[in-house]
Length: 207
Image (cartoon, rainbow, N blue to C red):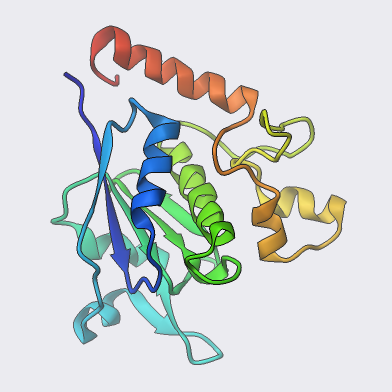
């Protein structure tokens, strides 16, 4: 029987309700993920912090995302890392998250999410970013927002901020995430995911 458990790793994470996050992710992707487990919270040691973090102009600790997988080489995969720290990419740009297919490590930052980390809105934001990054793992790509709504008439999680915020006028991170669906994809993305799900149901394996 096909089984693929998503491991959720809290890294310097200040929130709770990760069970809710895990359940919602599995509900969207099942049977691509058949379940989830939550690892013990991880606080960075000085050595570990030296590997993956630096200080920004406000003297806050931030994670350099290309170095992040180095910390989890021996962990069971696939792994979703959730952190309350800010995250930057190769271009030194602040990001919501990222996906490293080679190491099977996806990560999201709750740093840019809105309000209290345990609020309903914040959980929606975390789930939306999580399914965006996990969507990349299953072949989904960024797309423009025009005409790509979900059944709830919200923007698909694979919509990217920089593509449509110029057309709509600049908005805050919290407003951006509130416009995205945290429970489903648009029709085009859903078709791609459903094809993979059928593959598993027919052959008991993801090719």
